[in-house]
Amino acid sequence: LYELREERTMTPQVFTNLLSNILYEKRFGPYFAEPVVAGLDEKGSPYLATMDLIGAIETTKDFVVSGTCDGNLYGMCETLYKPDLGKEELFETLAQALLASVDRDALSGWGGVVHIITKEGVMSRELKGRQD
Image (cartoon, rainbow, N blue to C red; front, side, top):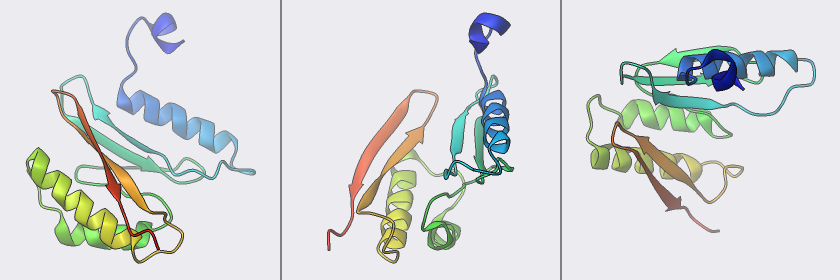
């Protein structure tokens, strides 16, 4: 509908604001979701944002975390992340941070999916965690 009305594609910033408004409308009976918005803006530079249950936006240049083990994950990402990593190095860093965090949290499940977004496309890989 946005593209039909505005005659342009929706940027990640516009989508973040739309999603934030939707979450804020339900603030007294919230959706139990902490969305992460990632994409490339019109200039091709990366855009990364996350929100809490009522739509408070947090944007950053390096990384965001969300989910049941976000405290563990944030600490691991702070420890392992370095700017300007290549695709494979970034995947290894994310995989190590995600698996180390998920293993320390009983509610987090058995792995995860890592998506790396570049100008050439999206690289997705599934990680298997401990099954016990």
